[in-house]
Length: 195
Image 1 (cartoon, rainbow, N blue to C red):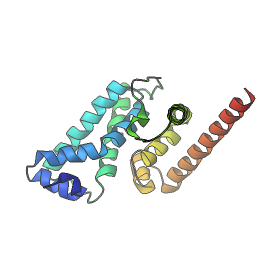
Image 2: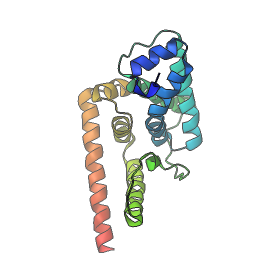
Image 3: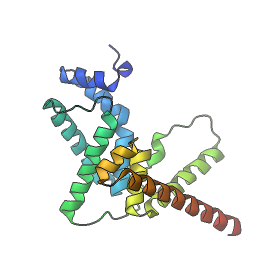
Image 4: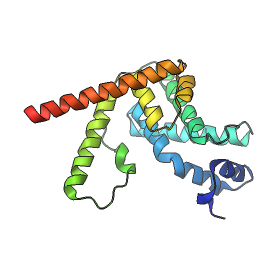
């Protein structure tokens, strides 16, 4: 039985039926998006790894208790759990996220690009580094929506529920985030051309 061909609901059912490999398949399908989302919020690879593990401990407990009912929505459901754990962590710490430049982990390593020249690869890598820095410069509420939408594949309805704002507010934050990124990219191009 090929687990790769199974959809998420089938994998959940197989896992509940005792097939541990089904959970491993679910984790492998989504680990880069979930880890990246956590990492972009906490900016600390060790903390992100801890929260990633805590997320899946909670996923396993919820699945085994029979409380999972998010048919076809496995990734957004896990993203909500991860986001809540990040919030809980900061509540316990009684502080806001601190932006730390930690280059141990490149969030874009998960992207595979084949048959590119060395120059193309260098340009792409620099662009990703620049984009990652620009995302960190966004206000926290805009950064959060952008990360959930882009890396977490969450709908604006789901983002609104998790962040406890209206859908219009979530949409507005995304619009502001994209506008701010465009402005940063434009001003960077101007600096590069005139510098």
